[in-house]
View 1 (spheres, each protein chain N blue to C red):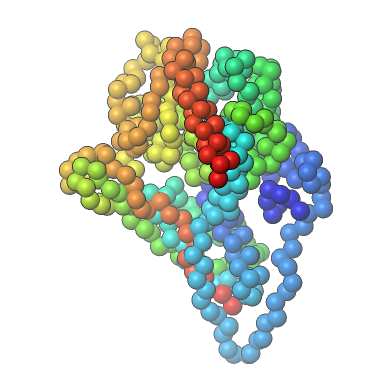
View 2: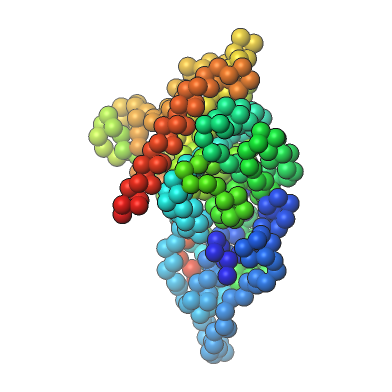
Length: 113
Length: 275
């Protein structure tokens, strides 16, 4: 259930940005969530609604942009797509993979008024 | 103002008290105002909606606290280990034995994280090692802000070792950097050899895996080789040590690992002070 804490962090950022950029309400939020991050999008959507209730983002729509997992295969010496941390290289079958992308959890943009 | 954080409301408590009643800022003088109100022009019938690029890490705030903790640890030569596992892996027993065996050799302190009760901190204090309990309330993991506050209470000595026993949970603590030098995952052989691929995030994030309760191996059908293979699939660089906190088997290799990590931390301090 750390999606709840993550949503609380998102809300904190929204409040800080509201002060900095002068807006009162958030209508929509876009998050980039990597396939290899420890985030369950469904749980995130649920938590977001709960956490933002009676806040400046009450009723805001949460959009999750998923970012595919990317890893460097030391055997093939190239980047390959992976879905899970324990995936093998789709080309050579090796597990010697260094994750290079897909672990991000970022707030990308907001629609505000 | 609080040196650690901007102080947000929460359920977590240090030694039974609300985090923000600690000695440094002593009490209820905090409020969470959002600064002066901004003027807004409203034209009827016209939407004020606009798009804003934010591009911020969701865990940015936690990562800032973690960075501050880490710089403090490096500047003081404190080796900090973040112990993570599922509930019941024998984490506290392993920690108690480690403290008993190393406390004459190295200065040690402990931060205990649990949802409720101070039972674990009480167990640790019985060894004579200073410990502080963080209760996370509804929270399922420790965060860097809580650890920052706990350090203010605990004041670990220069060149000491700080062990943080995280909340027993193989999911959430993986995402929250506390500023530690290493994450130590503990997995007991009563849990099943496929844990590393069932909970890949944690084993991917860990630097070392302690396979605990190996004294029970004759009574269980646990495939150690398979378990290590799974752990290395998720994390090719992970080091694995087989230990029993009950009969002491394999514990000397673990202590050697701690001594080496401590030496590395001390040399980082030297590098830090030259810079």
